[in-house]
Length: 286
Image (cartoon, rainbow, N blue to C red):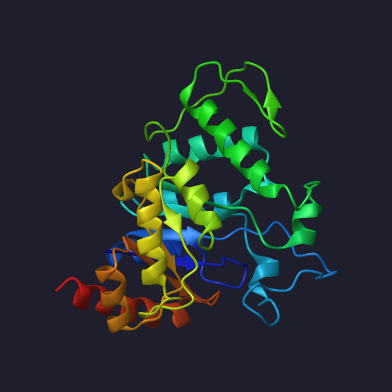
């Protein structure tokens, strides 16, 4: 099972280049960066896990800039958006950014995507909140057309462009894995329809009808019914605890990758956390 880390990079946290080197030196597989372009002061939308938003939501760097910096100082560490908000991104511009970063990193980019929960943030980008899932699907389809065709075109309900040319194409062929984030069943269905992996919400990491193991079984069943091999849609779980039994449980139910959270803190606060996880990784792998 692969192990990576996710971090809200800010001006007061450990910086991307330094953290990426430390993760790679310890043998971790990947570094992930979330995305929020801004947080509206209105705060009409409640935080989905309850309580107030932590300060780093307001202060986070652009994920592609942070990941480019991380890629430049590493050779094996994979770099991913965890997650990029498609409802807030122009697909032609984003296709270019993904291809460029995948080329610069020599095929180490993981394109984690999602449709967003913060209604007022999304609407500030001129996006109607209700049909955002259709918009996001069309943007993914349009980007795939750009990545795989010499003269792509796309004509949908929300995304529409005639034949054009864009280079470079991604280093990975046909394109970096599109890993879809969100809860079962709706995000799972989106992953099956246009993704190369799924990032479910894993609120319960124990057995039971509402535990993640049950949803993974349902997801695999849905994959087969849709004509897709579950092995082509590996599962990534974010924000797992530093608990060896939970990690072993994740491995037993078919989780491909777990991603632990690093707080937006300086180096001296993060090194002990990484050391702890390095020990867990060694214990998990025998």
